[in-house]
Every structure is written in structure tokens, then in C-alpha cells.
Image 1 (tube, rainbow, N blue to C red):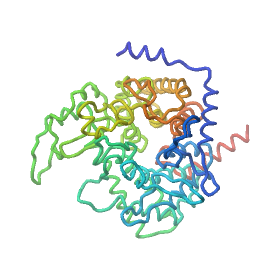
Image 2: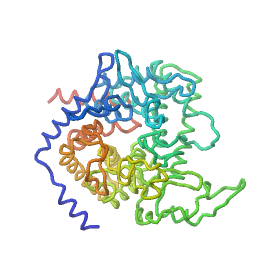
Image 3: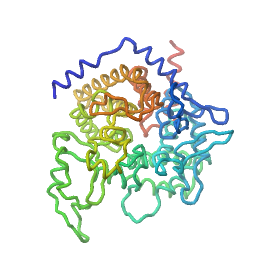
Image 4: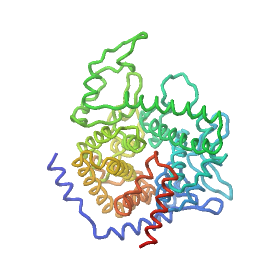
Length: 500
């Protein structure tokens, strides 16, 4: 293992063309921006390849794909674009009876009219859930950074928040605080046996509810409302229960797995159950022991009656750090796990979306023989460069929040992040900013990958910004920030600049 790491480190060398690559990436990013109603609104999913005429729906503005776009625009101070994007999404929030409150997966302006897709045009006709859950998070990021409390307190925004909460906090047959979704309902948008309560959706639900509470607090400060106060109480209780549920049933370490293997099964009645989901020890995969090592930990992909999904999902785990689900010691356990499994998760094109991939009969049965999710490809173990900035944000935010905690581990993570950054800088321009990469090492461009993919480009730019331009900007990703604090900080920076 050590020999493999040393060989990889020799392959990853700094490039003298860093400034040229960054400048070219910025130019590509500016080309992705489009207008709606005469004003910049966000980015298309991918630039049209100069030698291909088939654009599919990559020319639309996807809410999911624009998450890093909006964060990058906020860091540039281009608040008007972000506000227009948020307002456009609000205008398109569904009012139909069955889908009331959901935000569109994507939208596009055609002949002067804004046309939205809520899943009716998608492959498999599945409505994406993550688009709706991301909107309050982006809105709160915007309010934190811009200080635009008036927008957050407006009737339009508050009504949108209430419609969304009515949708996700509704009574159901289940007593658990998670949100149940079908397969293909989030970034994993092809069959991958992720139905139920997949980690990414539950973590996004947590971030969504936290952001909704922040936005409602601002409105409550201006106008006291008993109904709003009651909704805040209910939402905070749900938040509390959701975090406890995730830490109890999704968080695993070597120690918790040893306890799980020895729990009784077939428990029935009113007594306190040790094995609530009746998980048999036989379903625990053999690769998990080495994967966890002794001090590693992570949130598993899903918990279902008798069928936990022990796969590692990169986005759900990194967002759990950014949104504050994992404690600081748990985040360090996750970092140790990433370091220990670096050969799998980072390889030559950081980073892998899901591990391990499904193969053979399992792939055939659980993906419906989906050719796009062939083993080691797309969402079935493929490598997505756009995911690295989330991990980078989690590492840098933890480092700045806990400057004296396990400095050796922090240094190792920073070193790994630097190497991954150089790896992307050296490869992505040559690979035309491809959407995803295939194979155990992530060397080959994905079989059906689009090139000049927007979130590949902007993900690289975000990582460059956080590593090179202003590392303190990572605090934008902290949901506990306050708009007033930001405004005071910006005034202080402006004063200092004037004095110089």
C-alpha cells in the first residue's frame, strides 16, 4: 500500500501552467452563464461540444448543478445573479396538488417563456428531491454572504419556505424522521438500489431544515407570528430527531460494528430494542473490516429493515461535515477513513462517488442492467471531479474551526488535498473538463460523459479559490453564520484596505 502511494505522489507534480489553467477555466465558466428574462440567472449543465450537435438537456439550468455555481458567484460578490436564480426558482415552485411545494429539477427559457421540468421529461420520469432541498441552503448562503435580510424576510421567500416544509414535514405511515424517496431521486439519478432513506437525501434534509429555521428566524425578528413560532418549534424538533437518528443508525466504526454483529435478532414487543431494523450479522460485508480499520468511521448509505446499505457515498458524508451532523471527533474519524482508503476514493482522478461498485449479478439485478451504471462507471463507482471541492471545504472548515486538534491528521489531509488539486489541474484541461471518469483508477473519461461539464469546471475553480485565493471564505459553508457578522467583517476589510 505504501509503495502504491509513493508511486502516485511521484505522478502528481505541480504544474507551471497553474495560472493559465485557472484563467482558461474562468473563461469557460463565463461561457456557461445564461440569461432568463434578460438577466443572468445561472449556468447550463454543460457547454455544447464544438464537434457535437446533440445537446440533449444539458443546455438547461439545473438547480442541482448550480449549487457550486451559486457558491462561486457569491464568493465573487455577484449577488444579483444569485438572487435572480433564487427568485426564478421560487416563481417555478409547483402549485399542483400532488407536487405542491417542490422546486424544478431544471428550467430553460424558450420563446420568451420559462419552461420547468419537475421530472415529467426525465429518464424514468422520477422527480429529483435534492433540487428542492438545496434551495433553502443556497438561499441562506446568499443571505449570509450578501446581508440581504430584506429578501429573506419577504413574503415571497417565506411562503416558499412554508410550502416546502408542508411537503417534507407531512404525516406518513412511518414514525421515523427521515424522508422516504424512490430510486433515482437525487444526484444518483439512475437505478442503484438507493430507494428508501438514502444518506444524501437525509443529510440534505437536515441542511434544508436548518436553513429554513434560519430564514424563518429572520422573519420572526421583524414580525412576530404565532403560526411561524409553532412551525419553528416543530421544525427544530424534527431537526433534533433527524440528527439523532442518523448518528444512531448510519454512523459506523469498527467498535459499533462489533456491537452490531452481536445484537439479538427477531425482537418483538414494547421493550427497548437493540436491533430495531432486525439486521442479521450475515449482511455485513467482509470488506468492511479493512475499510474501517481501527479509528475510521463513516455514515452508511441507507438503513432499511434487514437491508442496510454499507456503501460509502462521498457527497452525503462530506455534506454531513459541512452541515454539522458529525461532531469534530467524528469528522476526524471520517478523514482517517478517507486517508486509509485513499487508493479507492481518490485514485488518479479524485474522487469516487460511491464505493464499492456493484458487479456481476448484483449489478444486473439492482440496476436493471443499466449500461450507464456499468461497474466502475457513472454512479456505480465512477469518479466525479466535481465532488472534490465539497471534501476540500469540509477539511478546511474543520481545520479553521479546530486549529489545535490532531494537527498531524490535518496536515495529512491538507497534503492529500493539495495532491488531488494538482492531479485535477494537470488532467482536467486535457480531458476537456469531462463529467465523470471510469475504471478502478479513474483514468479513462466516462463512456457517456459530457465534456466541458459546468460543475467540473466550477468545482475546480472553487477548490482553487479555497486553497489559493482566500481560505477563510470557507466560512460561507458554515450554516451557523449570521448576515450581520458578515457585513461587519466586510466593512472591516474595506476599512483596512482603505488605510493601506
